[in-house]
Length: 200
Image 1 (cartoon, rainbow, N blue to C red):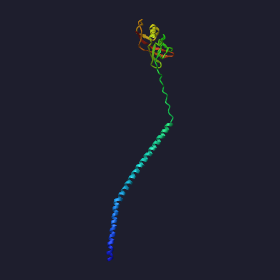
Image 2 (cartoon, rainbow, N blue to C red):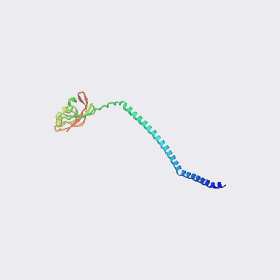
Image 3 (cartoon, one colour):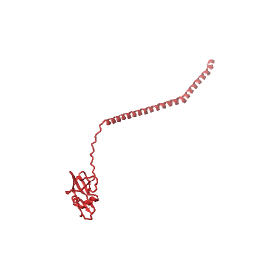
Image 4 (cartoon, one colour):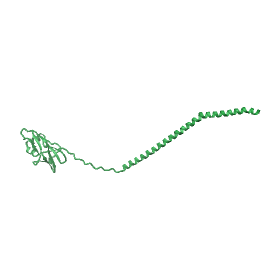
């Protein structure tokens, strides 16, 4: 009995020490271990999300790479195709005004008197092409040419023009009231419709 009484306090002290140690361990665990466990769980969850995003990005990059390779191949195929030759465009001939000298008695102009520029004292009529084979014409000359036309109207004017009035000694000009129409033939221009002129 004395032995138990002696050893009992020691047992109580040891028990208390064990309980205190357990409580201390639990407190330490609650204070440090659990927050660490929570952080570890959060990190694992975050890593799982990032892994999922990386996987999606990788899939997108692979799809883009495939599309780029396809576009590159299409470009190469297009470059290797022989270009189609375009049909040459038909160029319309340029129509330019021209001048003629004295007409023939039959109401035609000899192509030998054709000139693309006005020739002083020589050019008597100005031609304005409508197409390759037709042209309008009007009297147009300088002072000397007009004087010759007035003096010799039977040769210069009457074969290709209708006169609204008669030539008089006072006449100085030949005015075209209506242009005439001429058609191109081999070596000449034949008047199809006379011009109408007036002397003033």
